[in-house]
Structure formats: structure tokens, C-alpha cells
Length: 117
Length: 114
Picture 1 (cartoon, chains in turn red, blue):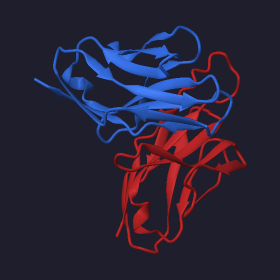
Picture 2 (cartoon, rainbow over the protein chains, first blue to last red):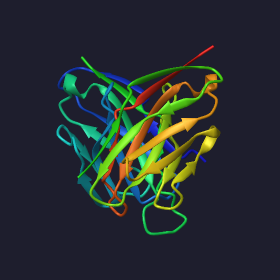
Picture 3 (cartoon, each protein chain N blue to C red):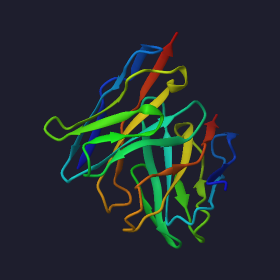
Picture 4 (tube, rainbow over the protein chains, first blue to last red):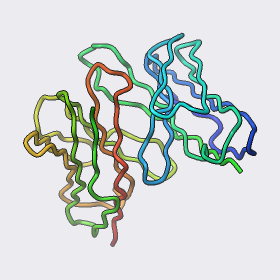
């Protein structure tokens, strides 16, 4: 049972390049999130999805795009990478729904560390 | 609107002594509150949560937190620190029923010395 899997773990990009961070989950959770973590800043929400085919912007969506064609996958696309996008990116999932057994817990991947030079 | 403030960016304790990590929150609604732990180069893991049941919440690894509405606080404590507790800790507030409305604190780095 892998949980939340993020790839790649590390990547260096040049300014202006594009790339996709992959996130896959095997828990059949409805909700998926992308956060970025910068030193001393906590986690900021980039995009989230409440189910396949549904996505919405978070707090810091500029420079990113997402899609959710399946329950399992939630890729994050960086277009025209900029140094300001140097960060650690975390994908997370949440079961969602009103199920009383739902703990409200987020399940995180181990992160993707991106450097833009 | 909601917000969370972690009052200390860095806390250092000796092994075997108590741990106190402070968190104050602000929320227009009855909040859910969480503490997550992040070990180096790892994702975040849930320590404990408060969702309007018992105000004293027990979590994993001997940690607990008390929800104090009058003080708008949710401080994390542990009676005796262990070297393995060294990590970054995040306080999180959310409004139930809203998928995106999770607000993270800026984190407290806990150092445990011999």
C-alpha cells in the first residue's frame, strides 16, 4: 500500500523550461491538493481537486496548472519556470465526504524538491 | 477568515524534559485544529486533531494538545522529549466542510539535545 507517491523527488530546471510533477494515490480519496513549502512560510495551497474532472485554484496558483482525469492522479504542471518557483512541493489527499469515520486527516507524499536556475 | 500563529519558530529542549509548542488560532467558525509533524526530507504526518469533541486530545508518540476556546489556543505538549521528536511541527486550522480552507502555521522546529 504505497499511499501518496510523488515523482520526481528532485529536479533542477532552467528558467523558462516546463515540467510536470506527478502525484498518484492508491487510497481512493476524493480530495487531492498541491502545496508548496518555502522556508519559514508554512505550506501554501496551489491547487486542489474534489474529484475527477474538478479542480480549483488555491492561494498561490499563478504559474501552475493542474488536471484530474482520474481519481488516482493529480499532476502539477509548471509552465515557463521562474526562480520564484524554487520550492518543495507536496501532494496530499483527503478522503472527503461526511463519513463519520473520516478523521479529517491529510495524507502527504514525501515531496518534490525543485530548483530553478 | 481564519489564521494560525505559531509563537515560536524554534524550540530547544533537553532529552527527558517537557515539550511545549504554542499555537494560537483565529476562526469565524467552529474550527477543526490539527498538529502535523515533518521529519527531515519527509512529508507531513498527523500527530493529533481536535474536532469539537474532548478538549484534551491525545495523539501519537505521547503528544497531546488542549483546545482552549477562551484563549484561542491549541498548544502541543509532551511530558518527556525523546531524540526522535526532533522535527518540524505545524499547527493547522480548518473550517469543516470546506475542502480548501486549511491554513497552516509557519512551523516550529524542535531541537532535542542530550
